[in-house]
Length: 137
Image 1 (cartoon, rainbow, N blue to C red):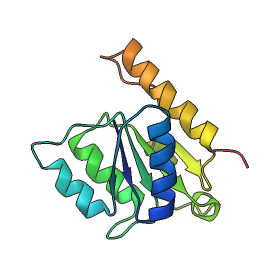
Image 2: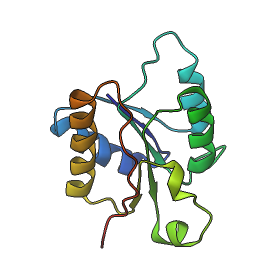
Image 3: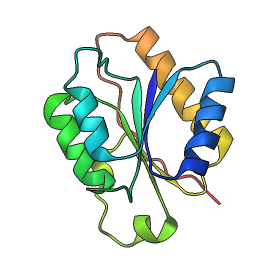
């Protein structure tokens, strides 16, 4: 299961469709507040990875990552950001499993998600090594 936090309907539909075609499930949230509320419910299950857009309502992707990691320190978070956001110096890439430059390349995202799932199957008790990947134009 993957979780997506993004207020852009079109991008979310594209990401969700790609994830679904690859055989995975996903849940979409339109804001950081909605996701944090969901985390407090009894039906919450930690995802394999949380895909977060940098610019979302109520707080940015870095702030959401901080809030999530307070409750789930081992959670893999993939940040999606524009080239300007990534190069502007305001994003601490070290806190993310990966940082992907928008527009997201399908093959880069699928490879990343598949690698996470394989690591989880092969090493279920170990923390996956953090990567800092930025997709290439």
